[in-house]
Each structure stands twice: as structure tokens, then as C-alpha cells.
Length: 64
Image (cartoon, rainbow, N blue to C red; front, side):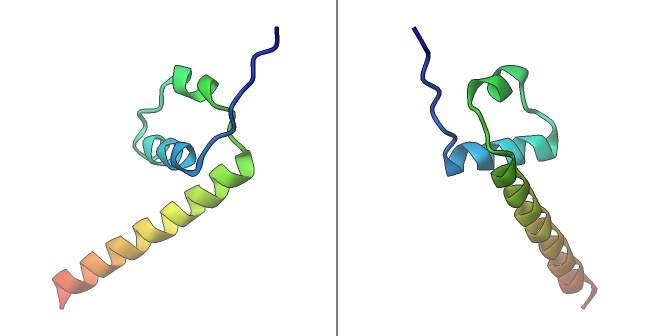
């Protein structure tokens, strides 16, 4: 009896990246859904770029 693993959705990958960014990802969640590493890396890079742009925007608003 083989268990069928569902593929990770966009929301699963987004939750993984965001929870990893603040350090609250549980081991049980990591084992539950198999994630494609390429999708995780792309989402993490996009998150990092958006985070940096947000910080730069906030600093430029505050200092102007």
C-alpha cells in the first residue's frame, strides 16, 4: 500500500519561505509536503528582493 504524496502548492511554498524567514518552521511541517527546491529558492529570492525594496522605501520616506 503506497501512500500518495501531494505536490506542494504555491501557498505551501509561500508559507515555507515566510516561516523560514522568521524561524518558526516545524520539523513535522517539513516532512509533510515534499517541496521542489527550485520553487523554494525562487520564492526565497523573490521574498528577499521584496523585503529589501520595502526597507529601502521606508528609509527613503523617513529620511526625506
